[in-house]
Amino acid sequence: MRLAEHTPAGQPARRAARQHPAHSQNSDKPCDTGTPVPELEQLFPQVDFSHVDPVFPDKTSDAGSLYKYNRKAILARAQSVLADLSSRPEKVIAVVSHSAFLRQGVTGYWYFNADYRIFDLTEVKQGEGQDPKYELKQWELTKAGGMGLSWEDAVDVGTYLPEETV
Image 1 (cartoon, rainbow, N blue to C red):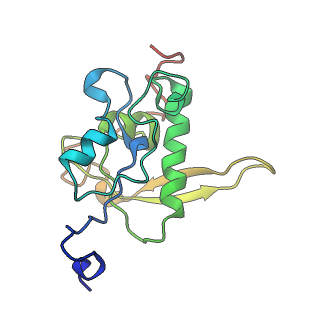
Image 2 (image 1 turned 120 degrees about the vertical axis):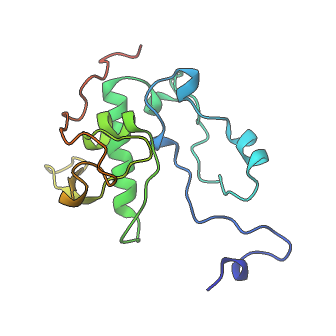
């Protein structure tokens, strides 16, 4: 099946990739914040940004609290991306993100530039009325990263994150 068969005539095909701002870098520094969606839509008309949180790329206001640079927000954001991935129908999903967010919020592992790791995602049941938690178990194959260049030692998720927004 070709993607072109499912797009209106004369329209560029939209990629299957989903842009998800919750996978963004940790801090609210200019180098770690995204570009507003209207600008991205102009630069990349072939990409569907319709599901991107309208708050994006705000990391400082009350509306942008999910994206704030503090331990509570980053760990909550990490669980939200794992919940989102868990709900997907695909058996294999590639996530492109940032090493600090992945290490400090999601996996606990270090990533060399352009490296990858493979994990199995499991849901951990919580008490009644509580949201489930999600955990990752890394494949032995990628303990040093898929290219073999990343550190094997892990840190506890949440390590080195500020308690309060800086």
